[in-house]
Amino acid sequence: MIRVRFAPSPTGHLHIGNARTALFNFLFAAGQGGIMILRIEDTDPERSREEMIGEICKDLNWLGLEWSEGPDVGGAFGPYRQSQRFHLYREAAGRLVKEGKAYPCYCTEEELEEKKKRALAEGKTPRYDGRCRGLSADERAKLEAKGLKPVIRFKVDPGEVVFRDLIREEVRVDPSLYGDFVIVRQDGSPTFHLSVCVDDGMMNITHVIRGEDHLSNTPRHILLFKALGFEIPQFAHLSLIAGKGGELLSKRLGAMSLSEYRTLGYPPEALVNYLALLGWSPPEGNEILTPEELKKMFNLLKVHHSAACFDFDKLNWLSGEHLRRISDAEFVSRARPYYTGPGTLPDEAFLLFKDNLRCFSEINEKLSVFDPGLEVSENDLGIAREAKDLLAGAAEFIRSEGTASYEKMMGVLKQKTGRKGKTLFMPLRLALTGKEHGPEMARLIPLLGAELCLKRLEKAILACAG
Image (cartoon, rainbow, N blue to C red; front, top):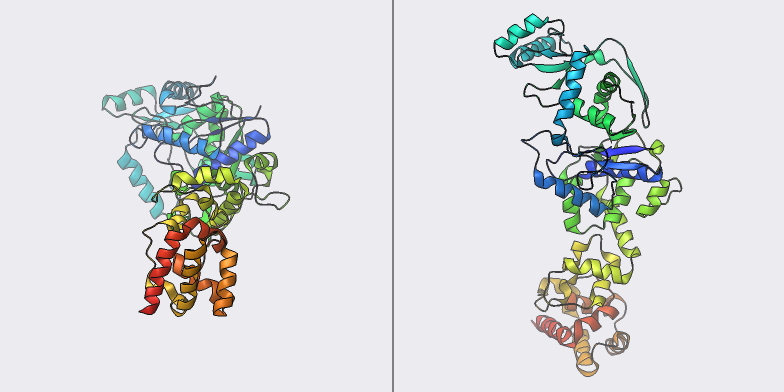
């Protein structure tokens, strides 16, 4: 059975890159009838934050991603927090040393830094020179008697590592270029290389789907998998996400945390839809897809290896499309919690803007038109200042017949003033809302009500007189 994992570090909220990696793992597993595991990589006590584990789960649940095994649900291969698996890493490292596949290294940080500077000065790639590889037991004992604490290094023997990446096809690397790398630090804690390989091996992970920033780690990991006696999983390295112009992704260009997108009220189904398109194209060309459709269509082998570009405009377009597709009742139910203005508005007020929202948090600004305290400045009135006759006629009509019949009122005003087109309806829109664009006046005016409409019209008429 296919088994994939998403393994975030609890050092902060999930961002777009993390979320896409989690999504691609989820979609691949779902489409293949496989299992996704959530594993928390919290081996760094200084940077890991306990509360972030709950936030990560909250973010993933909000996106609709599910996992079969993890720290919150358990499973046969737990524990699923690396901080609770240190005994397994120590055991694996001890076995590698015993089998001659790893060794203690007593070189100090100062010595290693000096060697690194020397190599760079000579135009060479810095790598460990293997000085401690051949130390005898007596030599090690003498160094430890001096109080030196070793790291554990994995032996990298000559020979090219060749693997087939599911996205990048064949990859060939000579890992000896890296030299013997550290798998256990001086304090006894495992490095990422050791912990991830022990966990992936023991949890029977069949496919490792992660960012291309890990591509240089994969040859090391393949060597470790072999040395530890584990099956080597298949690898797929996703391209990094850049800004629209190819620049590094910044917060301004979309690199916000998922919690920020959630706070802004982006529908999660729209964000999932957009993330799926960052590096993958649906076979039939239709880009507006539900999570269920994505599960059926997604194909890891069709993911592009070129950089994916984050386009905020496209996300907003997709988000608006998803909002328009949900039922009116659901739209109101989901939009209402974002409204913080005065009073309780009817459902119809929210639905006025269903076709004009990109995210639910925009509803506050839209619904401000219903705020009794809304001030329409003289600058906002524009051409309404030249239409006193029209505004006075509208006020007279509303005093007489109310706001129920917009079409009748406009017919009367057209006949009385001789105005038509923009010169007929725009002054009225400006006087009542202070804006040139907005919802249909035929739907808005009845919801504003006679009292509020008259208040704003009378103020606009006074402004015209001035």
